Image 1: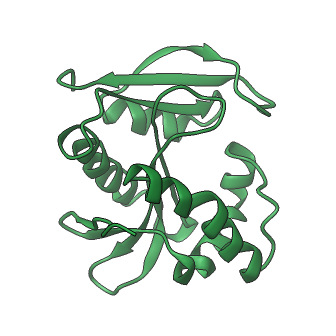
Image 2: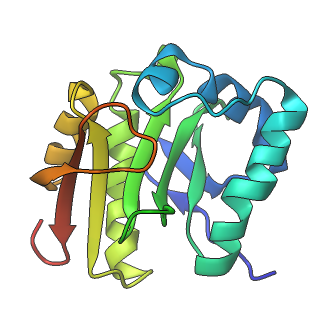
Length: 175
């Protein structure tokens, strides 16, 4: 397996998510906001979380060199959420996504992590465009996508979505 990159910001470390992050992933996937805005992944214990990482997250990062990153706070080593660049089934392009544990929301961490991944998407992974997708009621994610420079493009059909999904896009050099 290739050596996967870890990225840093002023307050955060973004490292590729691995099986050791199963406790974080279990907690994150079962937060009320995740279930409301992203959907129930049916991950109910630590073994299922490890399998989710192994089967859903690791293959993409091994194949493309980017994917899901665990967000770690430098100050205390606390794992606080995840952020990533995703090649999703049924979706053309690469989607930037982010989620934090509730205790770490509204502190600028999601923007800090997503901003770093936006930079490396263009500079290191040589993507020409990134997208952001969110359901229409997730105004916090919409606001963060706009703050990152993504622009609303249209409402799209998305596999298994039960609500309107809004598509935002940013092309390299337009932020």
